[in-house]
Image (cartoon, rainbow, N blue to C red; front, side):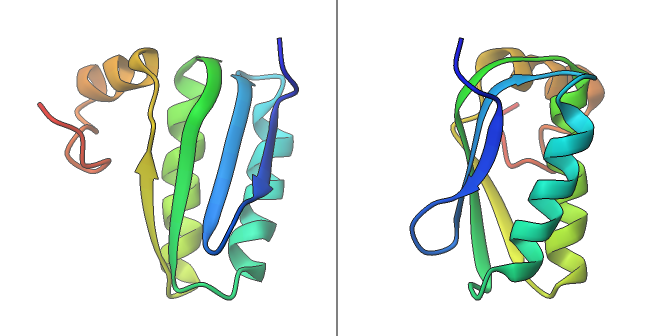
Length: 102
């Protein structure tokens, strides 16, 4: 299992990795907020390809990051969303907000 983290990638890319659950969520939430605020890019991409497993906490993080970006006057696009997170998004009716196929 890899380390759970969110870190700055190239340009406006944010890289989310590891297991997203109630234990990792609060720290990731704050770290992501800080990275979004500090980024000079006006268009951010949150890459979730390295997420190993996620509960609904992961989806909550994505929504919070989207709010943070909007509040900072930036756009945020999600890519590489794992199948488990896509399933939760569809059941929750959030697939359109995350720009996922129905």
